[in-house]
Image: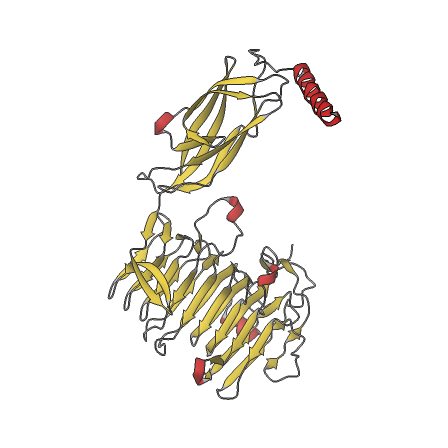
Amino acid sequence: MKKTHIILIFILLAFAFSGCKKEHQISDDPNLKLSFSADTVMFDTVFTSLGSATHQLRIFNKSDKDLNISSIRLSGGESSPYRFNLDGENGVEFYDKVIPAGDSLFSFLRVTINPNDLNSPFVVEDELEFVTNGNTQTIKLLAWGQNANYIVADKVVNIGGEPYHYHIVADSLETTTWTSERPYVIYGYALINSYGTLKIEKGTQIYCHQGGGILSWSDGQLIIDGTADEPVVVQGDRLEAFYNDTPGQWEQILMMDGRAGADHRISHAIIRNGTIGINCQSVLKATECALRIDNTIVENQSGYGLFSILYAVEAKNFVIANCGFANFWAFGGDYRFVHGTIANYWNANEHNKNENAISVTNYAIGGNSGPVYYPFRMEMDNCIVYGKQKDEFKATFGPDADSLYTFDHCLIKSEKYNGTMPGFNHCLFNLEPCFANAMKPDCHLDSIASPAIGTGNPLFGNEVPYDLDGVSRVGAPDMGAYQYVGD
């Protein structure tokens, strides 16, 4: 009986409290208005035909009375490029949405812009209109549209057991030129076929979707021909500010073995936010061409900056910065680097950093047949090799292939090596180079105290007389890609 009485008492109390609860009434007071998390929803540049990222708009009722929003609508109606989701429901118009006192509604907006004939970015506007108690309030919607050349994969090939979806942009015996009039958006790989050539002119902007990039097939040729004022930029296709420094958004620039007289060239380029910035491999046959790089920045790659297998690479006036594994990794091959800065202060995913800034080897494990050896040669002149690890240069060599490296007038982070060892000529060790902002990365020398200032070899400075910014280094060159200019 006691248990039954207790239950009855709780039931009666519950009814009593519910009877005392004050019910909010919907107010028709025209002085009560809505508040919003923003008065303008602004989208970053959006490629035509592609949807944007989703932006959130929060709608507040800050009064102590319930409010009924009699209508919410996109001014452009069904023809609007914008789309609206209100508390999980999609549409262009909504009616009689009640917001309790002190509560809010969540809405989400996207935009898809139709292409037109313009090359330059163009503005696309609309308004989101709210009517409450006779009051009309509007939120501006603003986006910049950009027409583009779309490269969409329509074929697939297996390389090393991995499928590569591609579209041929330069077929055999064909030269294709990409210009800066409109950006290029690549879905899959833009493929240069055997004996085809792709030339990319100054100022061209290239945006690669997740898993895609540029692929030069065996005996193809890639020429990137930017200038100091108008570099070629290769990056991911997400244009929102959040993705400015997000690595791994696209795959790689992949160059296979090439033919004699058809060197690959990358000049005045910025390659950022991919998985492997530049991947050059001579696997199908011994390559008869070289990769020549100058005045180029490769940064913020989730894997490698420059990855090479048995290739010949010459790089001058370059930066490779902040990569998840190694900035430069090589198995065999022939390399010469002049006035380069190779700096790794990777912090996007700390547990992913398990290589040195430079990691090279002359052998690979070849299944049941044991190690496979190939000759390795590397010369680094007036370079900086620095980063967060104790040793930013790692060489793993076996005895069955000739291997040689030399560092001449370089600044190196290493506890294993020092200037008394063979291969290190007039080098400095473990002295902070004083980068402007290594994490960003910005590898300009930012202090007169930098040991790299004035300590390069003038012979190499004369070979590359202007730094990555076009500043003269003749006479007293600094180590690295940039000449110190002071305040």
